Length: 140
Image 1 (cartoon, rainbow, N blue to C red):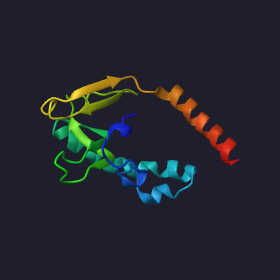
Image 2 (tube, rainbow, N blue to C red):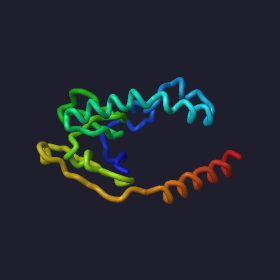
Image 3 (tube, rainbow, N blue to C red):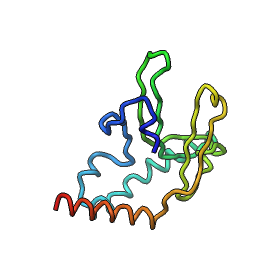
Image 4 (cartoon, rainbow, N blue to C red):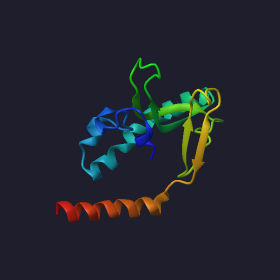
């Protein structure tokens, strides 16, 4: 969790999020949402093909840009689908692994890469269950 060390706003409302599905799908019930997912297949297939034609792969990633050191320009937080070179650290990521690339004045051309196992399904499920129990106990 790096956010306490970043000199930018950390309010969720300041994060630009590109969802993987349309706002209309977000309004559906879970069964209707699942039934409608195949309507996204053609658009995603086109995105995958376009990326592959350039030697790239698609990843859903966060991009954090702190403000310029000289005080010009604000920072930004964006999460969305990006095409990255297939041979890049992010491009070679697989499974539930996580990765952070840090670019700085010292790591401008080649980033410092932190890579390792992500939570995985079991740990994520346990965390969600824990959050649900906490919500039930505090807001029940």
